[in-house]
Image 1: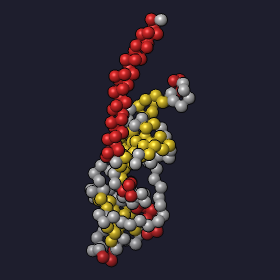
Image 2 (image 1 turned 45 degrees about the vertical axis):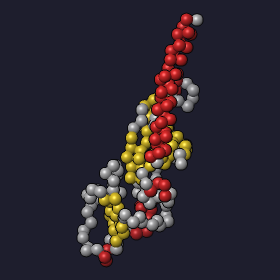
Image 3 (image 1 turned 180 degrees about the vertical axis):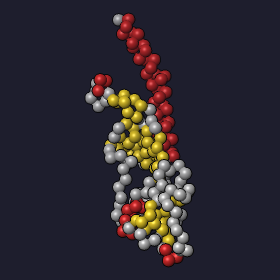
Image 4 (image 1 turned 90 degrees about the vertical axis):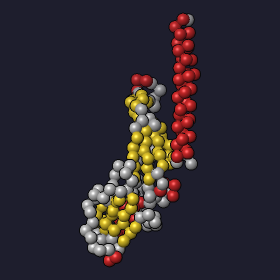
Length: 186
């Protein structure tokens, strides 16, 4: 469902301490069951992330090509593994237009900031199952978000914004021009 929230930002992750189930498309392997191969350093295997514990246990999963960060790590304490998994976030940012925003009602206090920017996010170990598949989070303006949009919901938001842009262009703009001409005349 679409939800409008004020801060905190979805760009800060919280790490749960409970252990989460590992999806079937990802694997955890005990070092005893492996051929004792040296693990590649982080960011070296396209399409795959790997977390290796201090004891040599390896957990790995799919790393999407669109993700901006690789969560691969080596030497992680086994006790910290659940929080590392919960903190995995595959993300890709998109920009929004810069507009003058103010909270005071005065144009003099306006500051340039982006609106309708955000990211595609996927948190494969999130306690909320809806966050385990890619979703879009949109920052409407500073501190106000539309979170967790699936493709249909994102399409609905885009249609509403398109309709609003058409209304601004086709109705409000001519009405403003007419109002200014009327004002100048009288």
